[in-house]
Length: 206
Ligand code: GDP
Image 1: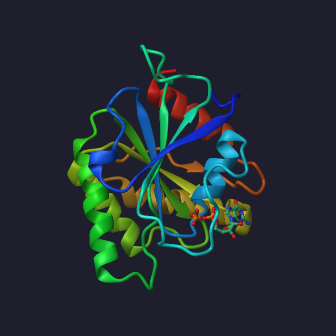
Image 2: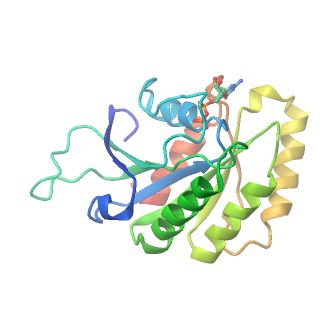
């Protein structure tokens, strides 16, 4: 699954552009600059797949990625899709932008039967912020299973990672749709990537 190249198949600015429901999919969400593009690129071993960008809050699209080598025709479907959700929490974002994000994401979360889990990325230096909590509320409300993934663990000391894992586990304990286990990753140091790959493979049943 992660041994082969992945390709971008489409950007979805509104739900009518969604690919027909087919293979199981997992989505990635997180505040702008959390390291989402870096993590997706590291996961699939492809540096330029998801764009790493320092102009956050720009693209309001769900970006679909699949493993290469499936035509999509005559039942030759990829075994899964990975969906990069637009980043949130950009401080300068105008209200219309935030509203558009919430609508796109909530409609997607509520309506997508083939969405198996959302990986919510949290920057190790910042922990769960208010706008992360709002997204977790949205996920709980939509009853979509989600799992927390810490990013950039190389930016803090190992004991701080342990502490953050415990604090975050405590914070999500009573959340109905949260998967209790948290995955700690660093794209920079290639840490936790195999754990995340294994979690994804298990989630989509491969
Ligand atoms: P996105 O906006 O969530 O897609 O974030 P990016 O992947 O573009 O990363 C934002 C910034 O964090 C970039 O400057 C990355 O180089 C940096 N970054 C991402 N992942 C890591 C990591 O694991 N460790 C460190 N030290 N920096 C990272």
